[in-house]
Length: 234
Image 1 (tube, rainbow, N blue to C red):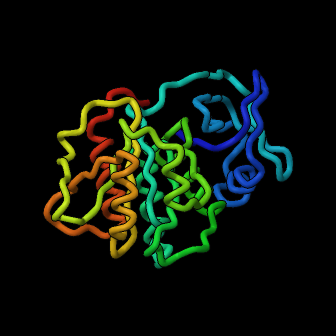
Image 2 (image 1 turned 90 degrees about the vertical axis):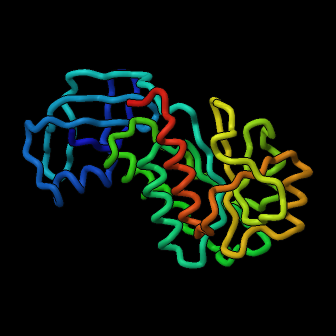
């Protein structure tokens, strides 16, 4: 399946401008080739490629709507690493494994304050297309931990930290839920003040095993754990 990103409104399908350039100039696809377009909202159009100069359009054969998404939904709020390549790697792999939302957390020990969120969003779209996802994940703007906690649901929110002296449950103790939110701290972990704040907000602590994982590794580990339990996906 040659999957591309675009807009689907009723019977009208428009291929994204950057995707058109990629089709014509990079892939050098030929008119008449089979092509698929998703809007990242659960809709999928299939048809034949039409090329007019530098423009690429689709002659639509079929449009499928409301295709099923991954379940359960997973939201990972993660502190960005100093090396941006690591958080980009996490984003790509987590998207491939069905993550629904990513939030970049600003904590006391977060080393990177400036982020190119638009670049991460483009990487998420690319990873979605590569893995044939028809629901693209939401990449939220960077937010301070204390502000993020104002909008959580404690019953489905968990934090992975390395404070071994504090009570933590194992992943297999988490009940089956329709929505999960995981907080992953920075290199150096959450501060004791932040751990107390999380506890005050009834966020349950989880152990990811005996090994100490890097921030991006912990995020990928949680995404993989959730992927292994997916009940309904395309």
